[in-house]
Length: 71
Image 1: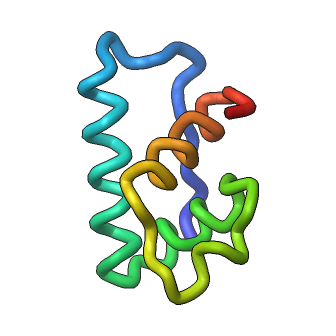
Image 2: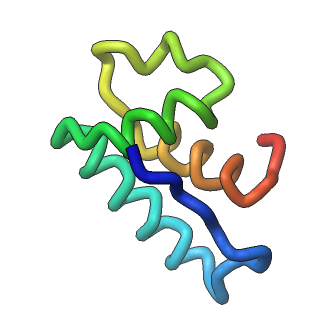
């Protein structure tokens, strides 16, 4: 499993964050183990993700948490 790290500063725009979340969601839905591990590690209710997939809102939450935001 690869380690995913983010830069200390946020991207220049909200659309970039949304794109990152969209890419995370697509990878998760495709069964990518790194995307699934990232989601499980950063989502406040990882049990919710089992079998239900990853919604865009969940993906945005994971990205926000990876940037250090609590919610």
